[in-house]
Image 1 (tube, rainbow, N blue to C red):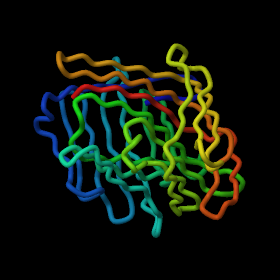
Image 2 (image 1 turned 180 degrees about the vertical axis):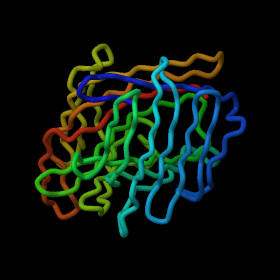
Image 3 (image 1 turned 30 degrees about the vertical axis):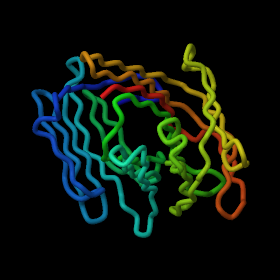
Image 4 (image 1 turned 90 degrees about the vertical axis):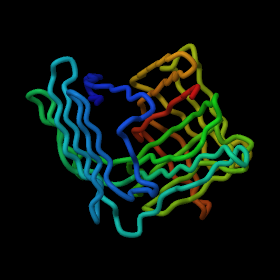
Length: 264
């Protein structure tokens, strides 16, 4: 958990070799997911009109308890694609953003509320597939309002380049606007807090600056398996264009952008 105003991070991590004891449904939101290990428990429960998130752990001695409902608005559209690398290597991914969130997180003696009054949204990232041993990707996501419209971004790169598929889309007022171009990502790996730029190279459908306010790196090395992740939280500004050709100007749209490199 990251508190934007104070940059405070409270977290717990658990490594599960070979994912023993963990299972996820074969379909998006097709069933409940739960996990428990020592001082960390979490549950993702599917209800008819919402996904309920329940978490409890202690981060450096600070107890954290969360109970948040992420709505499933009627008619709300999401992005789902299959990305093929070969006849035996593929990834199915489903991304849902701009889903209104309500509830609260208690951190020690502090209570943080989520709701319409503070523009709270949830994002679902679901994936299943068979990856190459070495892989890397960029991913950016954001949800909020701009010019009286509900705006969601899902932007990806690297892992889809050259496959003929992309995971790029805009969700405007609950409707998906697909972006079929591979994106250009410009950022400084030596200075993750420097501004990023994400754009479409052949059209004007995406031209965004991303200005990080927090960088969270993580690295895991377990012999032949490893992961290096750099997640930056920040604000997007610039222009996106829907299917109707109308530009939407963004300013201070909060979200994140990341780079991930893995061996698995």
